[in-house]
Length: 337
Image (cartoon, rainbow, N blue to C red; front, side, top):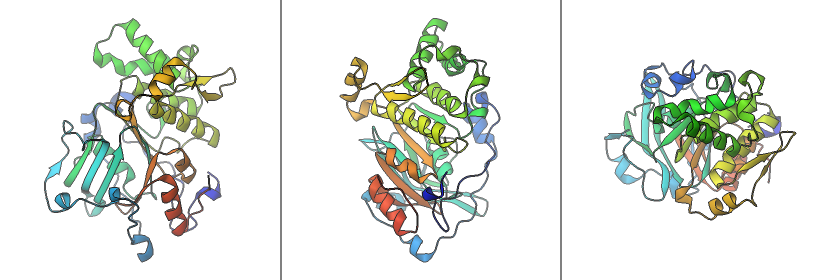
């Protein structure tokens, strides 16, 4: 990541290798095993008093009075967020020993949005994401997301493990009891949705680039028909070109548009197709929504909405340009668009 996309001090530094929570795709798809897996506590991050001031870009960043006055906890995955929302966390709190990972985090994501969650390393982004996925129980507060939901992890090498791309995407469909032919067709459709159509399913996994593997992981999530995608720093291990391809694939899935791949592997939106036309005209409530956790500021431009997190709290929420301006006020160098 270029220096133009990093905070100059106390900032959203580029993430170094972080140990994955699990060591295999089967484990990553099992909530019970993930809940049992050790989770590293958030590292200390101490912003200045100026940075601690909460920017109230919208009401989304302010905890509700009812949630702050209640000590009850809600991690029941059967509970839905408020009407019109795909994701809702209210006064979420969680500690690992003496380390406070979430300190009253409140987040609201409208249905049909690609919502980017930014923040420095150790601020609680991934912890909040896992709580929303039901992978971590909260100490207090609530974290809810529309069901079904799918989680895509940071390192594709720990998630895409079967011999071919198509087999890997179809792997998660086994729990649905689908006939092989139906599962294969659904896997092919999901690969097309992330720009990997045209027989890509037969490609051996070991021949894929990091970005292609990550898009296969996203396709595996989409094949299961989720209403919410929870995406944990998917571009950390990717170069700029691969990162752009993964982000474009997720953006297309959220917007209801399909990506087409040409012979060179370049992507473009298939806006003229009948499928795209019907999808784009559908209501946001019928489309997939996504929470994209990242430390890369240049990815803000793809967002429908965004939030900034610090020290376990959401300190700014709103339009991506408003969040970008807040970051600039805090010393970040954020590209204009």
